[in-house]
Length: 133
Length: 174
Ligand SMILES: [Zn+2]
Image 1: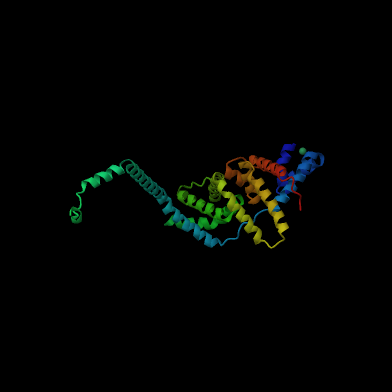
Image 2: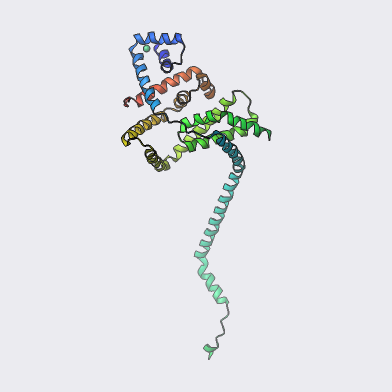
């Protein structure tokens, strides 16, 4: 085996996940090749560091989790269908409100004065007897 | 519903392995819960179309890996908002431990560095390494899941190891 082939096997050599023949081949190569030997050393160190900082999987109540998953499927079936509809309805509502508000504001700004004037002028005066005295 | 009954068996049989794989990528219980449940929902929707080109397990792992990829894409997008919750979690973790503060801090630094190094590997190297080293999947299984040759799996393990060696070189063995 060439260096490149040896290098691809180093991880499996360290983990003892190779057959005896390959193992022997690697050991023979390592004896002669300082580059691969150095790499083997550094790979073992690296794996030691990694193995020390592995985060353990949280322990779970698997029956309960399975129930939650099944419930989640039903939930997603319903809400997966409703979600686009809800999003559409909400955005429609927001659009309508902001559009109305915009219209209201622009109407108010340009015509509020004249409208009031018109309204006031349209009304007939109150009859106030004291004043006519 | 007949499919539903069958599917509950599928969940019971495979959930632990799927959970372990997802957790080894995202390292956070709440996110893992969500991704695993999403995975079974995706699987449920298309279970009747499952053609058996691979084992159910391989098929589920592929769906899970896709969801992990989506999760990281989303997280990258929202990463600006993540800073505060990460800091909070760190403080909580430190309080949880009764060991000496110095030791806790040192271990935390190392495991952060390790997780960051694995997390920053190129995508393919990360997937191959996490599945092999953190989940103990067989080379043939990984090749099947990712749809690549076994030789390519081994080559990616080497590349990942070589990158991790460089990234973690400064850490002394304890
Ligand atoms: Zn060599």
